[in-house]
Image 1: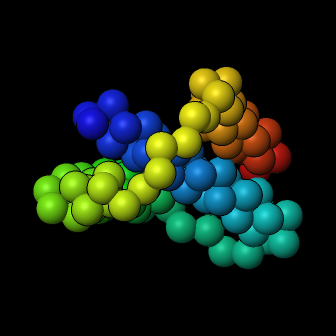
Image 2 (image 1 turned 180 degrees about the horizontal axis):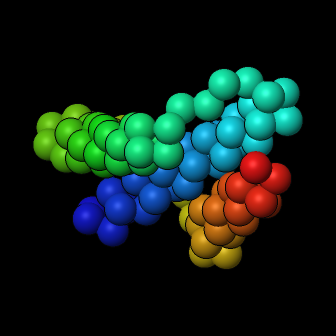
Length: 99
């Protein structure tokens, strides 16, 4: 249970980082005004905390038990679970290099 919470949070945070790097690279190419580095870091930390707390509240308790009872168990290949966050992080690094 705890491992799945961390995995879901990691995937969402990696996707958030990918989108943030994409928009940062896009805005730098268009010479759009930027926010300061300090404000960007604070905003990123707040978003990461929000994502983690949102997932913690969503996947614990009664709602999680209901979802477990209703869902059909699907066998996922482990390589897909590993490749998804790694791909998001790799693409975020590519966009970060374009800034």
